[in-house]
Amino acid sequence: MSNISRVRVPKPMQRTLLLEAGYRCSLWNCTNQVSLEFHHIDQNPANSVPENLLVLCALHHSQATAGNIDMKACRLIKSALVDRLCGRQDMRTRRQYVTAAISELRNTKTFRGSTVGPLFLRPEWCMERRDRTSQMPNFDRQLLHLVNSAPAGDIRIVFRNTERFRQKLDVLVPESERARFVHDTLAGIERLWGSGERGPDLICRDTGHTNIDLIFDAAVLSTFRRHQFSPIEYGYLSRNQHEIDWAIQRFDSVFDAASRGREIELSQLKAFVVTLWTTS
Ligand SMILES: [Zn+2]
Image (spheres, helix red, strand yellow):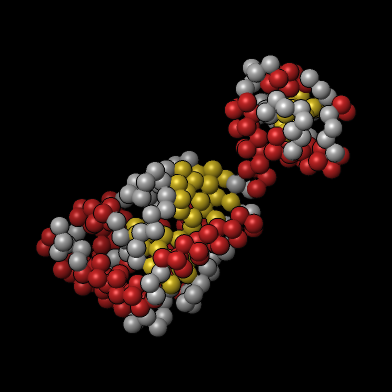
């Protein structure tokens, strides 16, 4: 066990680490603010890089060295500290995620993200029907509002036209109304894009990615799903500018690589709507 003075951690790095920990033991329930020490997470005292150093009080340092607080626990404590510093906020439930997304949508002019099928484009009568049955706040309505008010180019949307979209519609739209649904949705597409001279950037294919980012002016909502047809399971919101910039780069590179050009993507979207119930 070593205390601060005996570990060769440069002074500036010490300051950074102590700031990260809030000048106290990093264990959540520990209130100790004195006798702080640097624990080498991998138990290698020569590895004094910031990622490997955890600020602990003398008692918890000895427990970590003895392995009572094991290496994995130390890594989790460390990553929680870093997340807090990055301004990350965990999204543990779907409701939390949707609520955060709507609140960001209200305060943004730009948007990048993906959506299951052209959900937000469905006709008003269909949306109202869903609002009555859904327990969730309405993300689609807010997205439609933004899309209608933003100039082209500030918004890029990936329409993932998966089976899940069709399944949702099967429940919402009885057979007798499906022709009307297709007609009204196509009219909505026409209103938004015309013949492609206006409206948001779009691609109409699933990029297969299981990590999905919704990117706003001042936040990125990063989410994870197990595979491309399963719902979102976990996510976090970050207001860290580097993280936002990085998410934009990642999104745009996938988007640009997948795009077959605006005209083709728009005609693919229309074709998808037209063939909703004609293929089995
Ligand atoms: Zn402690």
